[in-house]
Length: 201
Image 1 (cartoon, helix red, strand yellow):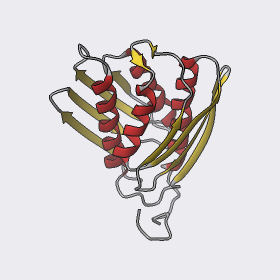
Image 2: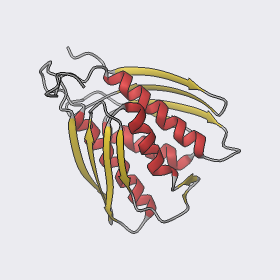
Image 3: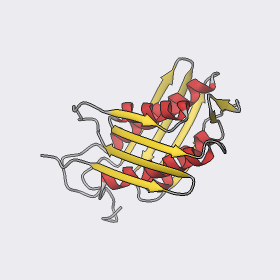
């Protein structure tokens, strides 16, 4: 019986108070998902919901943040906490595919995501967003969320939006592509092998 990959993370600062419960799914997951997101920023909730839904995660995320200042701390800190939860839930990256990639469209928008569960945090993000905000979320924070997640999770991300006219569509396609790529990368291979020539990740 495969071991459950779950994590609970609580992260409190003077700017945010975050509680997360995460259960990772994969390509072979058949269990029913539970998703509940409340960051206080509607479009950020929407993006995290898409990430969880298409990544086959069960995710409960609640954040009380200093939104009277702006959206920066809430967006950044939830991404950091989610990356921490991902890393903790995954545990030692043994018996997984390690690499994943996906293309996801949303109407006219098309996004590509490539993931390496490498233990080396790096993110190259090009979403090509043009608006100042989508809903109450600053567009400059959307790639920053992905950078912050990758850094805390200790993984490599390349996420590009290849085309699209609508910034809502561009952002959502990016999160969906990332979700599918991560789902592939963390899928179990049936072995106990560490997928690296070094023997460690």
